[in-house]
Image (cartoon, rainbow, N blue to C red; front, side, top):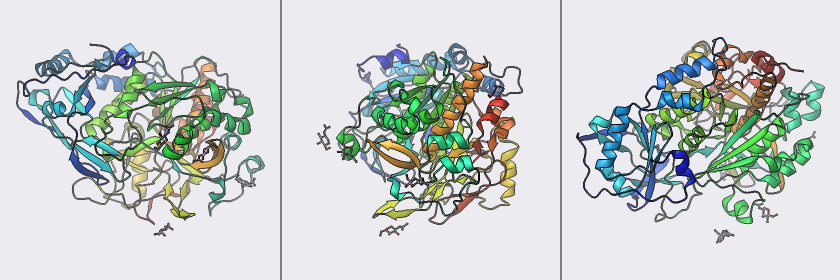
Length: 616
Ligand SMILES: *[C@@H]1O[C@H](CO)[C@@H](O)[C@H](O)[C@H]1NC(C)=O
Ligand SMILES: *[C@@H]1O[C@H](CO)[C@@H](O)[C@H](O)[C@H]1NC(C)=O
Ligand SMILES: *[C@@H]1O[C@H](CO)[C@@H](O)[C@H](O)[C@H]1NC(C)=O
Ligand SMILES: *[C@@H]1O[C@H](CO)[C@@H](O)[C@H](O)[C@H]1NC(C)=O
């Protein structure tokens, strides 16, 4: 078997299907998992049986509990092992499946003439390439084409089966019943003259902030002043690094980033051409400007440009890495076109885990309603994120742009369309740090802009994403603050959310009307897509100060934030998470932690002090 890494490097993938005979197994089949498509998805005709998909088989990991124990110990500032992050080999030793697991799964594949195309080096994932018709026999299921309201198409099934003796050896197999698209969390790009001062805006009394902060076009100098990174000279040594991920064909455009930095951070302009780009599973990379088609036909790179500009504007001269994962091509509205079959987060994180080293902070501005994916798959992707965290990297994810749920979208996929608030994934994973968005400066409050029509174009509600997971129970580090918040609601919204779930976000930062460049032109753009890369850049600066003192990077942030680091954030106490109905007010922002702004926005010198670095 080739390793996953070499598999990705090889250009030719032969379909490995044989399946000459009907399914053979030593025990009868039974359904392993059923998961219904959320109601935005319409079931269409049977999927094309000849279309080849890349099936990822998640084998039960040998000792994930041990890995989780390591993660919490090395991330807890009061533990003797704080900062003693694990190597790739140590991680693999924990998650490597038991021999019996590997043998049973390989035997089943072999009996059915299926040859694995690759595995992860921990051998906890096996990849096979098969035409859909063979997958249907292997998993005793039927694939159909499904179309999302936004036009996105996938070939999926609602349930799949395994021989009974394999149920305890396999956690998940995808793509089967995951209806995941990795949507970018960007509220609409708007030209500058559409930006409106929020009704609650007040001119800041701090003259330094008032001088550089413009609420309808916020810039790196404003962030540096507001969050007090100004004057900090980053060393940007070889160990200092920050990365961000791109999906859905998004590509950071160097000439746009150059224009942005020339205007707003001239000393950083070289980073527009020096950030590194990696292509995973055919993800696009380019060095030149947007082509005409990219700008007009495909309308891409708003998200990627925002990410790289928010990061480089605050964190220069720290090295930046961009990851582009393919597999979610722009929508092609044609039923006969083979549909998107990839699962992009898994492809990215498994690729990353094969690398010897990677950036100490990685920002992701994509997410999806948690109920789009089955629990088994969410849990395994989340487990892969834990493996990144235990190696000493902070993973930051945006909390979403639709408050407690999209207008008219708040229905459970329980088959009864029960009205409920909708949480997002991956931000609901307890091993990542969720970032919400704020607006205004004095005081900052949770970001919000009502739905409206601008020149005949509908602009949806924007409200910083907020919620509780239905899949992940509340992690220990939230045991103090989250029940206190729930109690303070006095039963309001009971039944609409899971009180016992992981609440998010953990922290927040500015996320309304970021100045940025796209296709050679300046505009402004909003979203937790903006606050997440900005916060990632600031965490990278904290790491820079630690590394300069010979200390390890912060790694998985939450145990530190919830026990100590929270004191380095300005508590936000104003605002609401809106959503679900046109005028619905959901969770209120409150003193202390709340599921809209978390612990609040960064105060850089305090964070450095609390983390044990010096600040000059
Ligand atoms: C704030 O930015 C907007 C958009 O760039 C601009 O029109 C406006 O003049 C600026 N306001 C101030 C006080 O600079
Ligand atoms: C641009 O898009 C149009 C419409 O989809 C297509 O016909 C044309 O071939 C594309 N041009 C390039 C250079 O990709
Ligand atoms: C992008 O820029 C090109 C070149 O200036 C222009 O022709 C094109 O219309 C622009 N696209 C959009 C969507 O503004
Ligand atoms: C936007 O315009 C449409 C069509 O005229 C209308 O139905 C809708 O209510 C408007 N929405 C808002 C938020 O003004």
